[in-house]
Length: 145
Image (cartoon, rainbow, N blue to C red; front, side, top):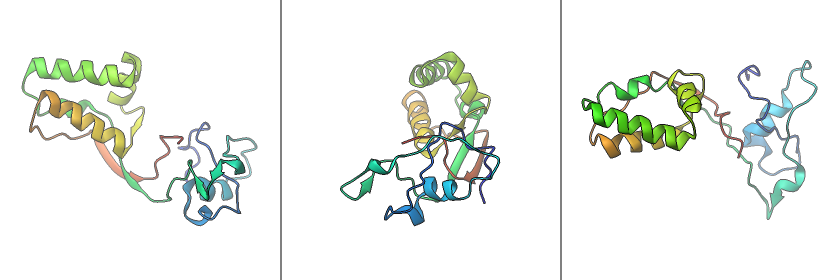
């Protein structure tokens, strides 16, 4: 059901079968199906549950993921706006290297980050239609909590 080659080894799994949310938690469902070849993985500890809630809970549902941000600039006519957008994205992402990993599709973009990118584009190019290089439905393994 899951492609374990796509799941980063830093993405925490949850072995807690006693959790009330286990049946709908992506971390638990992935953990229960780990292939035998994997012997070590990061995990959420049972004491992560406080007041019946787990702050690491992630609903097991597919979302629209994006890959590549070169197309973001496609409808931005102003050279100055493109430059400001690139600078703002680089600043938000933390470095030029990270910016280029997103731009070139090496890092996937979850829905929350897609919205941040759209907001940044609209700040410098209001009303422009924003698209990504590629979108597809998948589970979100880009955030750890």
